[in-house]
Length: 393
Ligand SMILES: [Zn+2]
Image (cartoon, rainbow, N blue to C red; front, side):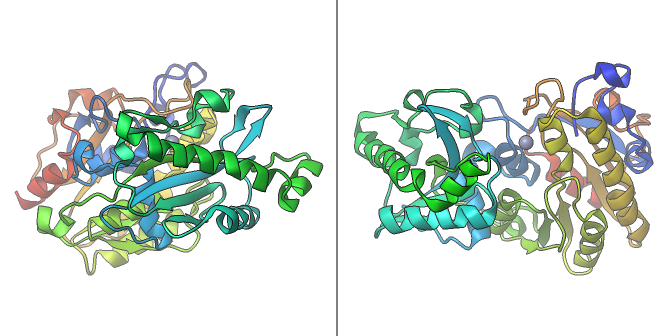
């Protein structure tokens, strides 16, 4: 949700421009602040920020997108196994033209990954298909993924494949790098002439003609949410990343029908699931991806709409349904400013409302109002502690 002032919105941010009485009431009745969810040196993305928000220092527990997303596909990892995200991408004349192979469908992609698996898979080298272009490469007994530098394909559009192939950060990783590069190069011959790709090209769509492993790492070993905070927790989200972190944290992962991770997500369903969950758990973390996607496509009107939908259809419904005393917080995980179309490292606004907190004079929930909040600037992984502390006051 967080952003910079947008000229088309009269130099207001989407949060300032949106009609969002429920978020504003949390700020007005509670206390606000800014939180730097992405520590210096960590990549500015949800893998970092969601770890922070759940109270886990990303510098310690964020081992990569691959291992954090793998559990929501039922992939089990041993202590020496490395999980990579394995995109199907489009290469043309030696250049990466699309990190998503034209947002290839899950059905087509699973057949392509199936062909790669049949040709290149063997004991220790496993391929798993996931959603759309997002797949997995699991390397068993692959001890040092941290010594290999892989480029996220969404950061390499228009770049030569040869310039961004995996690289060794230390001499003893050369062999392992060779394996990854071989897999990428071998996938080219398998995918190029595959009937699915031939048909896609005929229809004017981009083929998934190369695999691209990135975001590799071993599974994090982290204390459970219960061990850390003494609370039973649950997560509600459409995206594998949030569900995966929730799984490692020992939280209940609640599936909501119609939760898509896009603008058409089931806001009401998520609210109802959260209220139901609170009958059993102490804390529920509800995640909505839609404003981030609107930021990526640089559509300010759509971003305002996603914030208004979230406010009315999800947050308002939760606030109406809460009967017992409670503490509640609202915040984005990281900014996705319209003007840059990608994530930024800026601190994000947050607000907490709880019976034990006196209002701090901040009336609205947005990037600028939160600067005057009582909490000031907060360290990346303090949110849950602040929330729990405010609930116990
Ligand atoms: Zn994003």
